[in-house]
Image (cartoon, rainbow, N blue to C red; front, side):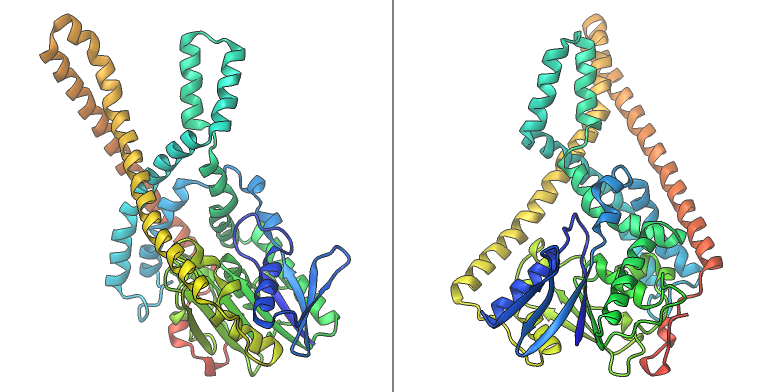
Length: 461
């Protein structure tokens, strides 16, 4: 019997949610000729099609990186430190020079370092929009202000604190989705914590498949789940008393493994994910998806085939296109049920998909640019606003000319102070990245995939 381990991606995923999406795709491909088995809790644990039954084992790890557990852990210091990792990893030999040339590393660092503060401006602008659009949150705050009946100065302070410190929908999204990546990778770097609970969950489900008599194991992973699956299959977090996993297939969708390897190269060991003689790795990616991509540099680990998905979404939906992608379902149904099957997509559905895709690709950049513009306006207001207020008494008492000079002088002084503080912070982030990479160089085995090949029979260390 075939066992399929499903590893979901980032976000507040509910148990059975990813499995249900996959089964929806199978039903679109096979129609009513799909039978779904349920466990005692009502979650899908088996699917039968084309005369074959596949047992399903979901590696549900969202509980270890929930929004509650992640609350307040997302830090801009993490991002600004991370952009310096490739430079130090290159200098310490943690990045293979045959795959990442010095010019390529330096160019990416030069483009990423200024991108971090731009991202912060985008965050500030997005918070501004969120506070305007989230009327229930604002109305609840104003209701509290009316009940407290504070003096004007205290009321102004309360409004300022609400604007700058109160979490918005943007902050909640960062905690529940984006924070999964730095928290998981931070745990891997430290060698303890939530990542190893997640890996233990993977190995537990794999052991359940063996105990249930499944003689063939295939793994399907999405987004950050592909990093988890690769870590687990390369032996990370594997109990000493359990045999090494030997899946027949590894399917990755929307995988950020190339990016993870560029920023944390020492966390991805040069190891073949499976010792099965017929093992194959199939990676699905969509051209519009900015998270994933072709895993060209992982071909040294095993036989790897990159499959590009067509259509199905733009900058937003393309990351979760797999349950309705004909290319994906064709490959999966052949691997699991012995014959390829894919849903028939009518011209109306294709037209709707193209319209939505163009809408995403046009709306997303507009939203990003607008957020950056409002964030920049906020920074300008921080520089000019206090200087203008301080200059008002001088305008009234000593004339407009002197007031303008004082305003310009204070604004320039504030801008100089902010610039100096930013330069010092950049130096601090650069040194933090250096210390981390130097510690990794001492504690971790060097990563040298360029010299490896599938025929070399590499296994996990």
